[in-house]
Image (tube, rainbow, N blue to C red; front, side, top):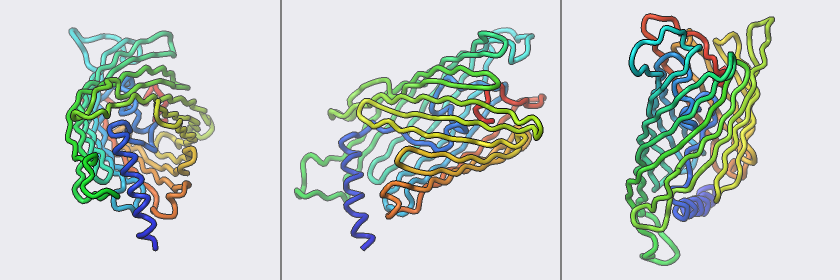
Length: 315
C-alpha cells in the first residue's frame, strides 16, 4: 500500500518539476551556517580563507528524493600594497566561488560560480557589503523510464542545457545584528531551446545576537524568507544558542513544512561541523523519513590566530 501511495506523489512532483524546469533553487536548513551560497555579499566577511563541504538528503524514503552536494571557498583579497590598518578597520575586497550539484529523480542541476564582494565600514560598528555571483548552470532532464497517460508523449522530451547565470546581494552587519537581501537567477534565458527560463528568486535574512554575559554565550534569533514570482512565500524562523563559541544548538520552524533541529561544534575557529534534522510536518511525513543536512567548515589564516567574526551570523 505504501508503494502505491508513493507512485502518484512522485509523478506529481516530477510533473511540477518539468513544468517549472530550472526555476527552483536548493533549500538549506542551516542558512546561518551556509549563507555565502545564498548571498554573495557575505563572501570575505572574516579575515581568513573559508572552505565548506556540504550534503543534504531530503525526504528520505522516496526513490527520487532530492539530494544536494556542495563545496565553496571565499577569502578577502588585497589589490596592490599591504594595508597597515587592522582588518576590521578598513574597507576590503573579497573573492570566492562554489560548485553545487542538485538532483531530484530524472532532473539534474550542476552549478559553477565565482563571486566578488566589497565591504565598507560606515561607522565604528556598522559595515555594509555588496557582491555578485557569475557562472554557469548545467540542467538535464532524463525522461528514460518515465511514463505518461499518453504513450510516447511528444511533449515529454529529454533536455540538456548549459546557460549563464548571475546573482547579486547586499549585506549589513555589526557585532550585534545582521541582515541582507539577495536575488538569484537574474538572467531569464530559455533552456535548451524550450520555453522554460530561469525565474528570479528573492532571499531576505535577518537576525540579532543577545549576549549572556555570565556564561559568555549568545542567543541568536533569526529569520529567513524565500519567495519568487511563481512560488509561494516560505519562511524559516530560527533560534540558536551558542555556548562560549565552542558548541551550539538551535530549533527552527519552516512554514507548513518542517520542524528543524540543529547542532554543531567549533574547534578554535578553525574546524566546524553543523548538522540539521528536518522533521517533516506536511503530508509528506506519511511517506518519507525526513531530511538530513551536514556542513563541514575549514578556516585558514597563515601565521595568525583567527579572531571571532565581527558579523554574528555564525554566532
